[in-house]
Amino acid sequence: MRISATGDKAEHGFRLVRRSAEHGFTPVRRSAEHGFTLVELMIVLAIVGLMSAVVILTMPDPRGRLMDEAERFAARVQVARDGAVIDGREMSLTVDPLGYGFQERRRGEWRPMQQRALARADWPQGTRVTIGRDSRKTIIFDTTGLASEPATVTLRREGEEIAIAIGQDGTINVGS
Image (cartoon, rainbow, N blue to C red; front, side, top):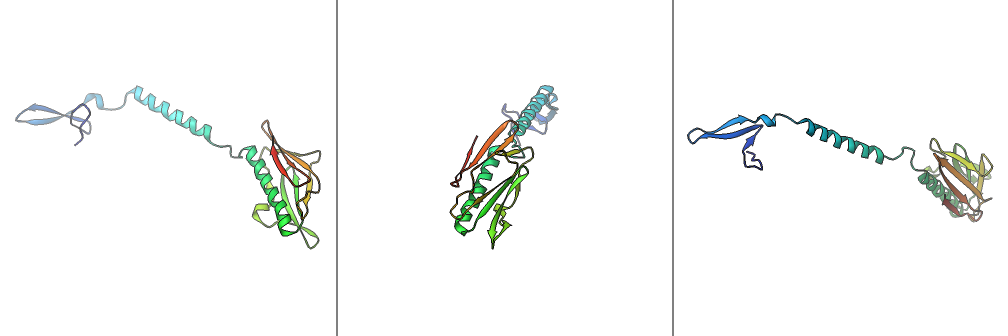
């Protein structure tokens, strides 16, 4: 049997009241405990509203952060460059406004990369890309990791801008 903080023994909205020594305790319904007051309901609604706002504000953008996309692009370019050195085979990066992809040179032909990490990737929706003055650019990494030419790929979304610089020496830098 539950006991409240005030010492009353209560069970399911009833309060036990001692009528007399012979009759023992008699259950009497508490009139003040029939439900919630309007103030209590308003407080609960305010708390639920605040929690909902916190959840909505902390939810990430489904497209991801632009910096994350720039770092992912830079990491994939670095994997291709390193692959050219390790495999002793030229690799190319092709960047256009829709996305980017990698190819490898096998038996004198350029073939798309079959590895999942280097498969063609599209830019997230709303991301605008510029590659210097060109709308499409292909950069070739030779077997020593050097790039055929330097390039800067700039990603833009909702006022944010991040540049990824690919140096002729094969270095890749993500900056703003």
